[in-house]
Length: 138
Length: 331
Image (cartoon, rainbow over all chains, first blue to last red):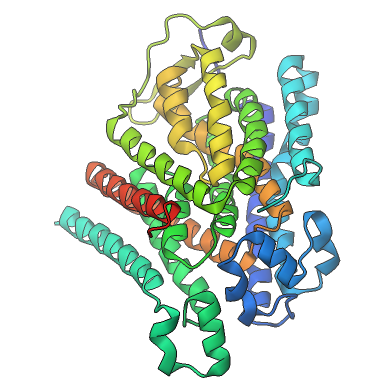
């Protein structure tokens, strides 16, 4: 059995998106964090009050600080703390973008089984990201 | 001489880590600080159990995670497996937020390592895709399970899991290139095979998987645990891919690391949607651990892996014990 020692074109394409996306996400995260902790952009939850919430279960934080769940944070993007989610969401969404890039290539190659598996994975990640799979935090 | 220096650096890093943990844990209880604070500050101290200002914690966390990153790389474990038990044990953060940050820490590390591993064919997309589908679906279930269970039960299970990981690290003997006689039908259908060049010999190593159905079944458990505890799951991925499925160690390690970028994504979304990601905790953790990992990689070539491995096993037993005690309401 002889396999190629070189990564397949779709594997390379996946790697390229991952590389640029990851470092973009990390830079955004770092910049928004500095804006947040320096109070250059006022946060939704005052920084001084954070110790009151971070030692308690998440339900206490959500109720006490009036923090929305799911994608509700998008309405608070102008606040320093929620601005940080831009970078975090980019990092968390990167796999979906990578998959979407390689799926057509897999089907073009006739790799239908792996293509379908990749499609199913996108579906799973989209369900997780959408917050449709509900459930309460304690 | 160089080796002695390195030993000294490693021991110092370990000691510094413990000092930071001790500093975090030894922040005075409300009653002790009575005379030192005024009314408002005292109220805050009583409510939070600490007198340190808010900004001190992200800074301590940053340094703590930096050292954790160095040690994790040198011991060959992911950051998440050390991060969750240690930070939930010694910092004033609730385990809900620690797990959210832990998943992001593991995710960011995996995303950063992924491109290099994929390009060098040390992570296999074909091996990862089916495994990722199972593990990431189950990680969602695990995340909801973890968020629905009471915190002390999670701590108790976490403690048990960490102890188990320590034993696994102590006993497992990975095989560099397992001999696979015949590939099973499922592995063949999924095209789980590949090749890479071994840099030390220049030899081309061809590989294929065996026992694929059993391996995929185990990823159900791995996915649930990754989501439930926010640990990342390299500690479990590698033995399953290497010892059970017969992937060469380098491919198992590379694919496992890449796999975390998908598995942890699904669980991270659940934690994020439930409000369990606090940037104030997550960002310094990610930055610290990634910074530490870069330094760790540079030290890796000169390190004495066995010593570091035993040190990490010791830290895991310690952290697992602390989680168990916390779960029992003693710690």
